[in-house]
Length: 282
Ligand code: C5P
Image 1: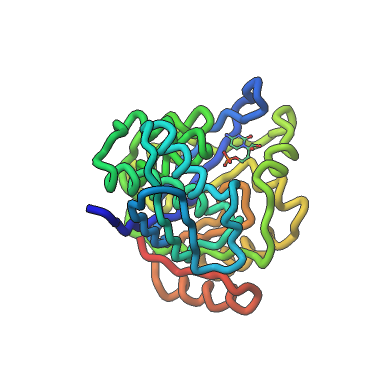
Image 2 (image 1 turned 90 degrees about the vertical axis):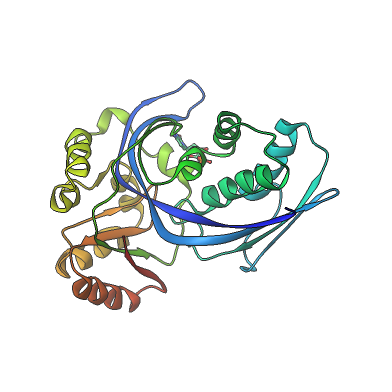
């Protein structure tokens, strides 16, 4: 096999707590992550040398900082191979949105290259490579629903999300994850997510129990910089969402609905103020 095409799914954080800080400045998390059916399509082809990267989105930076390129470099380094790769990303996940698009692409490149090169890396080695690319990449390799702790690499698989409609909206701006984390003062966190209650609700397939517990300690930091976060949440809740919260460091906000009709209506309302809106059935 010389070529493989993979789906690179986005994620949302049903809850996100920051519980400490490591010496290198990274934060220690306790977050419940969920893979969602919004995905980039990543094609990885084995070539004799060099890494050639292309994308359907002309404004996507393809240089050394690109997570897919970094994942390919890391793969060859860890596998001790001297080959190359042609990588193409069909971009559907909004960029800089808190939905883990760059991380999903990196995870797809790691597993795609491992497949076309005959699996030189074990699952454990792939997860280690993933963490070096970014905190969300190990989850993107794993998928499903997981409790993620540490920097995001300690993963406990959870029961799947009960059937629901999830509507996502990304405001027309992006935020820097680094800046949002820098803006968080651990001592000033007054409210935290009920992670234990959320885990129980997931275990019981209790959609209302999950939706009323949506909480993200980073939301306040991003919302202070951008009033749109509150505005979007209000639109979701006014449209009949059971709960609504910002994902990751933002600025995407999502709402959870039991039924399709109000979900669709919320999507239409939000489409009047932003171009990137997705109504998903999970
Ligand atoms: O790992 P990733 O590239 O997604 O992280 C981007 C930035 O977010 C990091 O440089 C760091 O400033 C911050 N971050 C953090 N703690 C985490 C994950 C990310 O402080 N667990």
